[in-house]
Length: 261
Image 1 (cartoon, rainbow, N blue to C red):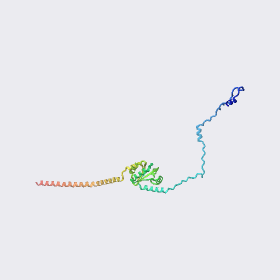
Image 2: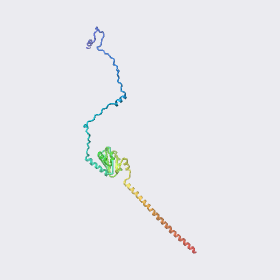
Image 3: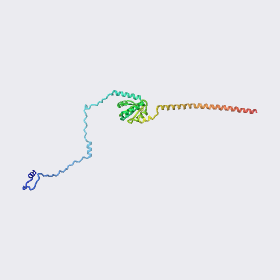
Image 4: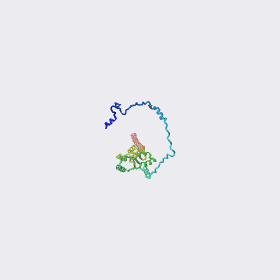
């Protein structure tokens, strides 16, 4: 079949064309020369065009399109009011109120910590932060407001037992002491450490009583010093006078005997 196709397509010998001519030829044309190149715009002109570019104003919204946003004020729940009142009484009755940050302590360790603090009459209280902040914002303890961020626990005691609290918290690294309000004085962590190094009230009272008694005894001794010294001088003077009279009498007897002889 291939031989028949070649015999039909190729010219036969003895025809006018002696050689084989292809059915199609490839003619190559020359490319057109590009004579027009677009020049880049100068950078100063670009800056000028950018500065002087027209910016159309934004169309104003019609007056009734945008309605004013009305904030919905949520009423405080009865539980929040009750907790805030309890927190107010807590700040009035307790002399030591410490703020501790809870760093994911488990329930078992928290129970052990509560038991250890309960031995020293120290309690652990939990309040929501929004309740605590709402109470602190309108009270004299407003400087404690930044301490209630995250999970904050309140440790309270009717007496300022700072040393016992620090010794107990030392065994619970998850509970970080932030600050405390001791006898209406806001203290930082360093201030709490300095307060724990102070002697107890009984020791201070004993030292004060001892100092006062010593001062009074010194005052009494100073007041009695001059009369006692004066009486001693008078007694010595009387003795000296008595010894002088006796010596004079003896000398007079001797003179009389000599005169008689």
